[in-house]
Amino acid sequence: MIGLLGGTFDPIHYGHLRVALEIREALGLDEVRFLPCGIPPHRGVPGASAESRAALVALALADVPEFVLDRRELMRSGPSYTYDTLCSLREDFGAERPFCLILGADAFGGLPGWHRAGELLDLAHIIVARRPGEVPKMAPPLMALLGERITDCPADLRSSAGGRVMWIDVTQLDISATAIREQLRCDGNPRFLIPDAVLEAIRTQGLYGREQTHTLTDSG
Ligand code: ATP
Image 1 (cartoon, rainbow, N blue to C red):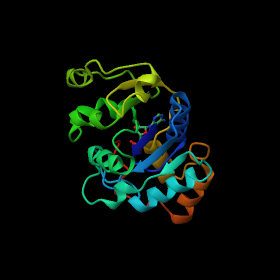
Image 2 (image 1 turned 30 degrees about the vertical axis):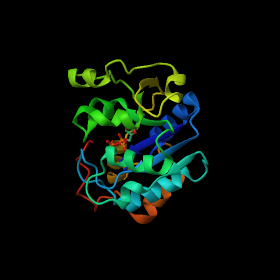
Image 3 (image 1 turned 120 degrees about the horizontal axis):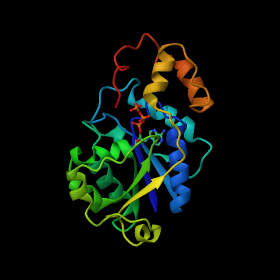
């Protein structure tokens, strides 16, 4: 089974890495692919370019062989729709391999508004990681989408390529890229919230500094 963690990663932080590790171990995933988006469809312009964000992800994953940087969303023009990404992954990995699309509960709550949302479960399972203080938002359209698909049994995930939804509680790390960008903008120190190599590269390249004003108001 392959785990898929998409995101803006603006920048990548230990919240992302920890959730990927815990879900990989809980489900016995062969690998987790990190998919930085090129143009996020549901939020403002990121604080760093797609290439810079992907380079930071590469630094963060460097020592973890089972974590893979997947750059396919950076290669496409237009918004990075998850549906298109899953179709592209199916071309590479075939129709049978189980995919586990990992989403924070915040992202999951917005799922009904996603491009071709009703078809995502045809292509992958969805694993929802609860974040600190979050109460699952189960609006009626989301309930309709889920139907009888919820399971708490990893064997159900192994037996099909997609179609099931599982909630997994992960260690509560109240870290967000928004807060990290704000710290960097205000000369704060996000050390121990992000890998040292990522912080060093941010500083060396002058990313997220005060001179960059076009992004820091968006909250995702
Ligand atoms: P921002 O603050 O800019 O909105 P973010 O920190 O939420 O960013 P994203 O790149 O938007 O990071 O997140 C990618 C995925 O990782 C999403 O599904 C999100 O819910 C999840 N995620 C982010 N931070 C955490 C965390 N601390 N714990 C668990 N999941 C997280």
